Amino acid sequence: MTDVLAQLRAALPDGTVLTDPDLLASYRRDEADLCESGTPLAVVRPGSTGDVQATLRIASSTSTPVIAQGARTGLAGAANALDGAIVLAMTGLDRILEIDPVNRIAVVQPGVINADISRAAAKHGLRFPPDPGSWESSTIGGNVATNAGGMCCVKYGVTSEYVLGLEVVLADGEVLRCGRRTRKGVAGYDLTRLFTGSEGTLGVITEITLALRPATAGALTLAALFDTVPAAGAAVTAIASSDTTPSLLELLDAVHLRAIEAYRPMGLPDAAALLLAGTDTSAQDLAGIAGLCRAAGAIEVHVAEDATEADALLGARRAAHPAMERLAAVTFPAGDGALIIDDVAVPISRLVEMLDGIEGIAAAHGLTVGVVGHAGDGNLHPNIVVDRSDASSLAAGRAVFDEIMELGLALGGTCTGEHGVGLLKRDWLARELGPVGMRVQRAIKDALDPKGILNPGKVL
Ligand SMILES: Cc1cc2nc3c(=O)[nH]c(=O)nc-3n(C[C@H](O)[C@H](O)[C@H](O)COP(=O)(O)OP(=O)(O)OC[C@H]3O[C@@H](n4cnc5c(N)ncnc54)[C@H](O)[C@@H]3O)c2cc1C
Picture 1 (cartoon, protein in one colour):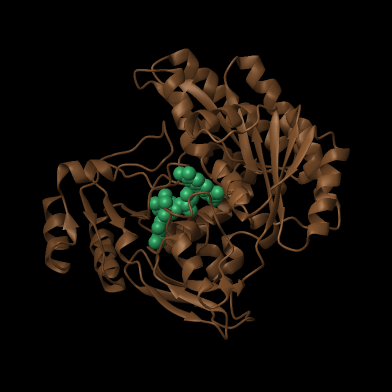
Picture 2 (picture 1 turned 180 degrees about the horizontal axis):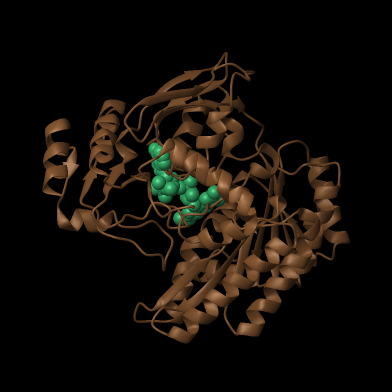
C-alpha cells in the first residue's frame, strides 16, 4: 500500500494524490443507498490524460483496483469505492475543447457537467439533447459510462446516440482512440458503443466527441391528471401509437406528487397520477396529445400558459429524487429512512401491465412505493421506502425490488433502462442475459482488463 502511494506521488504532479481521511470518506459512494462501499487508499485528481495513464500503469503493475468517478450522482452503486482502491476523480478534467458548428460536434473532457455542454452549444444555435434529471450536477464522463437517459430522450434518444468518438485509457495505461468526427463511419468493430455504458469496467474515458443537433423552438407542455396510475399508462401507450412523437412524456404518481409538494410547495394537484407531456413542434400536436389523454380517462388536462409555467412543471419532475429522500427521512425519523431506487424498462405495449403489477406488489408487502419515470420510454423508477434499522422492512423492500425486476423481465423488459448495473443489478444481469450472454460479456472484460483492476465487482 505504502509502495503504491509512493509510486503515485512520484509519478503525478504535487497535489494530485489525496489521502486526507475525511476526504477519502467523502469519495466512498454514489447516490444509491444500501450498497456496500469501502475507503479508498487514495483519491487521484488527474489534470491530464497523462496523469490517468501514469495512475493506471501503477495500478496495473501492483494489481490495485481503480474506480473512475464523475460526480457520484449514480443510482446503482457503480461508482462506489473499495477498501484500498485508487479512486480516479475525473471532475477536474472539465474543459470543453471544441464546439464545431459546421460538423455539429463538441469535443469535451469527461468532467464537464452535462448542462454546461448544452449552454455552450446553445451559443452556436445547437443543442446536446440527453438531459438526465441530474443534468446540472452529473458529468458527461459519467453520462457516457452509464449511457444515461433523460427527459427528452423519448424523442431524441439516449447518450449513446450522440457519442461519436472516445479517448480511453486502457487498464495497462495505453491510450485508445476510437470512433470518428464524421457523420458516417463504419471502420472496424464499434468500440465507441462498447465503452459507452461500460460503467468504468473496461477503461477510463478521457475525451469524448459528441454529436450536436440544431436547437429546437421552445417546448409546449401540458399536465394531465388521472385517477389511477394505469390510466396514465394507457394514455402513454395511446400517445406512443399515434403519429405525434412527444419531446417529453414523464409520469409522477400520487406518492411523488405529495412528496414534491411537501419538499417544495408549488400547488401540485392531489391526483393518483400526473402525466407531463410536451412537444417542440406545434400547438396542434400538443392538442392531439391532450385529446389522447382525455380519451384515456384524464380527469383534467392543463396546458402550461408560458415557458415559466412549463419550467415549473419540469422543475417539479426534477425534484422527484430529493423529495423522495425527504419523504423517507420523515417517514422514519432518526436517520433510518432509506430509498431503494429501481429502474425497470418495458416495451410500451406492456407499460399498463407493469404499472398495475407494481401497485399489486407494493400493496402485498405493505410498503410505500412511489413511481416516477420516463414513461414515454417505458422506463419506470419505483422508489421503495424502507427503514434501514428494521430487518423486516429491509427484507420487504428487497422482495418488492426483486418482484418488480421479475415482472419487468417477464414482460419482455430489461433490469435497467438507464441507471446501469453497478452493484445493485448484478444478479439480475445474469438473469436477463443468460449463460451465453454472460460468457461473451466476461470474455470482453477479460480481454480488456486481464488483471481485473477496473471497477472490480461492478456489472459482472
Ligand atoms: C437527482 C438525480 C436525477 C437523475 N436522473 C437521471 C436520469 O434522468 N437519467 C439517468 O440516466 N440517470 C439519472 N440519474 C443517475 C446519474 O445522474 C447518472 O447515472 C449519471 O450519468 C452519472 O454521472 P456521474 O458523473 O455522477 O457519474 P458517477 O456516478 O460518478 O459514475 C457513474 C459510473 O460511471 C463511471 N465513470 C464515471 N466517469 C468515468 C470516466 N471518465 N471513465 C470511465 N468511467 C467513468 C463510474 O465508474 C461509474 O461506473 C440521476 C441521479 C440523480 C441523483
